[in-house]
Image (cartoon, rainbow, N blue to C red; front, side, top):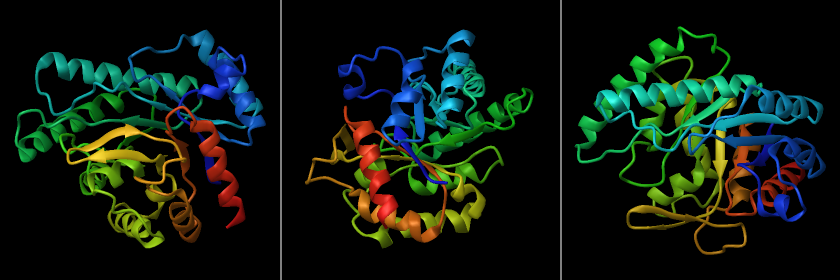
Length: 281
């Protein structure tokens, strides 16, 4: 089943008087949505009590929850403090994900900093593999770690890099952010075949199972020569990518991802737009 939902709570959610994410599952269900990404992006994690309330509501309204780990994780940084913090942030995100009954934890693997691309990637590889040793020591085996394709050239996270990372371990599943991919390829995603080429490359590298159960972020994004600048809404008609050819590629491949809208402020409405279009094709 392909699921659609927002990253966090949109402006409409709050303008209608809602104040707490515990209210989100019911509200999303009424919007016709079936997924919800909760952000631990600033390092603020949920209490056990609040997690149980959100999980109860998510089960009641058939909302699949994913989480996004803190933004400032950087597996390229080999300083002892960074290594310790990386492990803490990802493990805490995975523990929070487990309490929410979810299976996908989106992670930014790191920034190149002042290193060469090769040096940064080598450091990141060691950091991720060392972290996996910790992961397997905990009861987290139903939780996937989803390295995300990134939108700036300074970050590790091209499609090829993410596919290589996800080939290292059975726990690693890709998160394709097509707005990011479009940004670093300077607007290359225009047709259904453009999206199919990415999915086909992923299937050839990782197998159908990991692509069938991948995680997807989708939004239009303004970009410049360094890549991503700012997220936009579906009202934008300049930057793209457009959701129609993307969804047509998903339908053709018969894969079943969770598709999370990251539109700026209208993420639930744009998720609904995608959901309604997908039902028609």
